[in-house]
Image (cartoon, rainbow, N blue to C red; front, side, top):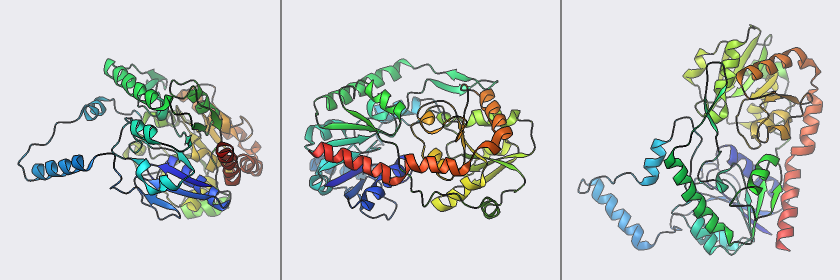
Length: 423
């Protein structure tokens, strides 16, 4: 059984998730390979897509090279921005990524595609060309969803709010007529490309994303399975709290709230709600510990320690172990790796009751869910946790996470699905 996993990058949340599945399959002696558009890491059985395997004709490629040369030499003016580029420039700041359903890559031309028994698509924005791929494809396809983009008009999450008011309430988002038109065009293209393909199965890591896929125009006639992400329990495990705090230079006498801050400008990640809650907090014994590239916006938050970006997973497990609680204020999310990592380290989690978060947090057992989505609800829930934090059993939290999210469990579920499809 030869499996080809396809993903655009080997860095980022979706990339981590698909590479962990790849690792789990390899441990189960499955012939798994990963095809990437952008390859940065040196990982076993991962390959970068060869530039010669383009969906463009040789004439078209030659024409582009000639035009580029003429522009560099100043003989031709720079081309006007495409309709896609103009559309992206007009989008409001703070919105999640938007991707169009076309690309210049022909995945079916890759030798890795040709030798595979099953194609396992993952996060393939700007890599998969819907029209040509599903027209040429002859292999069974398992599409693992990491967000909503495969079945939307281009948005990776259908954000209904944008911004926050003065008291910490979300503001409704209004779509422009241009957005509505572009969404409709892209959705029509996706539907036409996929409707005639009978060998597609959809995998959603969370119950929420699975239901969204089942109710979508694009995937409503396709089988949808729910298989949660897997985490390496040997890497993400509880570390000694005092030692972890000493290594990361975190005070031992403070209550520590952990937050991953790489995307504080992304409205969907909900940083504004956490900042507002922290501004309203009347306690000096609590610090916010932020992991991610350092941001000037965090300087205005009192009692904050910025750890910077952490790429080593074992060091990241120390950050979770050093914290009393991990807070994820996302407004929409699938099955965040950060929550799974925290639970595997035995650290409870606080989050909004949205997306796949309720799949992972059993309220009062391994964390707390807010009553609603706003800053006051988040503050109230953090205050409740700080009063009851001794009631959370970190060993029990980890044991439950292992039963549900261990890498072996995910790999076994995929192997069973692959075998069923091949039969």
